[in-house]
Length: 80
Image 1 (cartoon, rainbow, N blue to C red):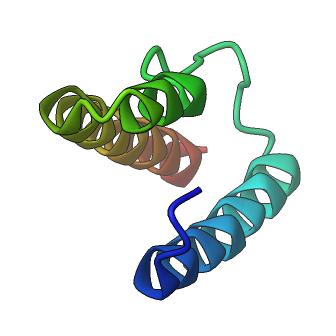
Image 2: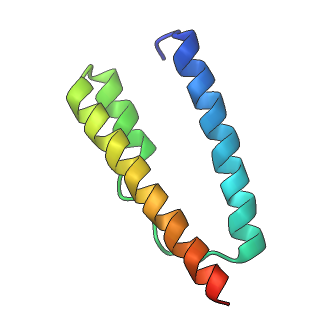
Image 3: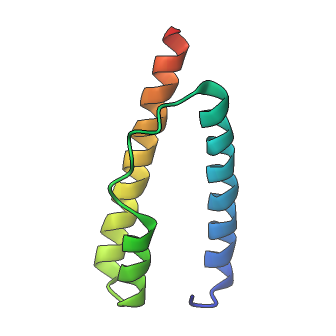
């Protein structure tokens, strides 16, 4: 979107991480019924609208939700 090389590298890393998590989900049968309410499209909309604060808020919420989701499912899988 912006042509920012640093941002592009971050997005590439996020893609690899999300791909790894999808493999983990499939392998460990993590339930897919919990969907992150803070979507990538919301983040992109905020960026397109140059609303830095909204983009930042949604990104932090998205990451925090994903972290909690991963940890919750990891703990549940350890108990099995």
